[in-house]
Image 1: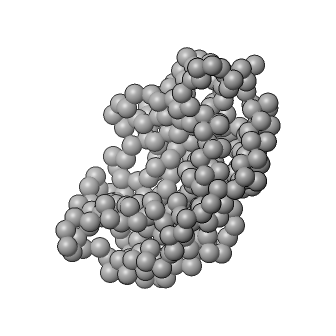
Image 2: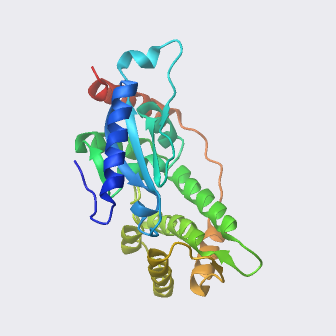
Image 3: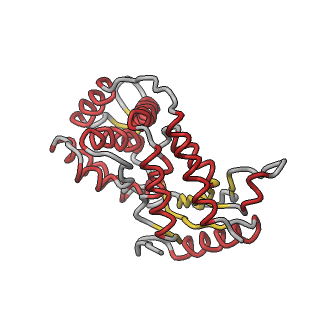
Length: 266
């Protein structure tokens, strides 16, 4: 499966393809899913946004019982706009079970460099079974609040490009009010399916148009409707401690073994 928009630089895509082939050959792994993450997949890229390729990889079965196991992350050099790295299948499942939403987002990216839909569907079904909705909400709350605070550039201004990094988690929290399962990655899809006031949508749209045509938005007062709405979302969301579930861990272990048997390289 491949789904790449015409706006992507062909040279960057070719370089990413070469890196993915190199990862498989050099590390002896299978790469069943490789996608674009970051602002290009979220739907608010700038002209000079990085290409954030992320992938899942699976090692041979024997590697998972090795006395000195290999790293569960494969990273390639950061060069220019290219940022290409990935997670081992086991790491992905552990993180998803702990409430990390990144795994589900990678599986729902609109832009796919190379991937097997069967792998995506099987891992997404497992993530749906092991994710704790309360942990998922806590993930988006923490990410959103952290980005909102990082955006601050003074008593009355914010770094405008960082507003998006807080808006998307806030919209996702509203999406989770009315939906179960793994949220979409794309801001457009989230906005289409979540209860967001029209004035907030309008201001977000104006900011996105500016971001799409400039390398740097700079700092300015945050749009008023967005400021009120995001502040309200993060203030109202309870930050609860969620105990780990032995049942979900057992489900994750069984799912990992099944995926490993099917997708590990021979």
